[in-house]
Length: 328
Ligand code: GDP
Image (tube, rainbow, N blue to C red; front, top):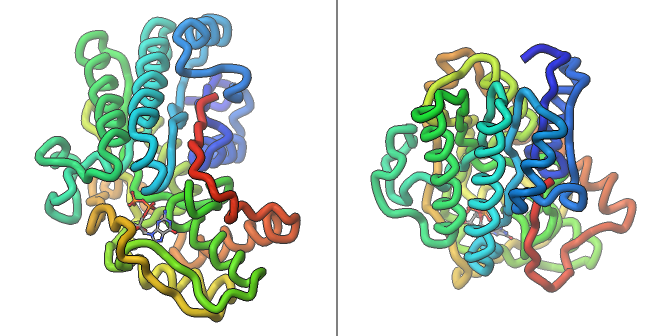
């Protein structure tokens, strides 16, 4: 992939896609193609084919997906399955038909079995039952990995899959009902500061362990893999930085400056007890995460202050679980 190549970043308005566009631009790539969902609905096969025929991208980062936190995944099970499978079928097939040189598909650490040994190696894929809260999303992502592998096997397509661990960064969904844990907690603590609440209620027991990767590190890994990796096997992208939800809450509370109490609502789901990826394969190739969790969180909190708190765009009290679709 050189700087003049035409690169399509699908999902450029989302957490992952926006970080990839930023990374590629910093690297000097000046022929990046994007579309919003209003311009191109990736669930529409005809529209996808027309787009590929017209634009003829040479490299594709497939970061478009229906995404959400533990509650949205539980509530919108059919939509998470349908939309993600549809996006993947249309984009992967178009990449084959229109001769894309290389495709990078983003899976997720939730595709691994719920109770598999930790840290999780790539070979544990499909070795046991999945976590129930996000099973439809996970099955859709497993289908994406299988699609890439199948086109490679049958048509010799250079399609690869990576499995990022739990991500965080700017341009995320900062809202408890729809977001993942880090953006939810940032929004919750700022809302509590604003309302002068004495306590905040978080979900589950606080005991689950999660590994977190700063999205700019993932973007760098994605660009690295596009250049360096060409194998049918998926490859994990993690940071090795693991923390309990209780300790994470304490850290974000400190960084935001909230000084009330944290209460855990144990009726809400915990999800997987632990999801720590074994990233030795990508580490051996020469990539490793750079951003310490505290530094990354500080950066996101500072960004949220400027873009949402000071502009009056805090989203915490929407009261609705909405589906978030990043499809363009
Ligand atoms: P997961 O990694 O797929 O389980 O997705 P999440 O990022 O949504 O949740 C991670 C963990 O954080 C789970 O154990 C949740 O129960 C816990 N958690 C605690 N409070 C919150 C919250 O306000 N929002 C979310 N999304 N998760 C929370």
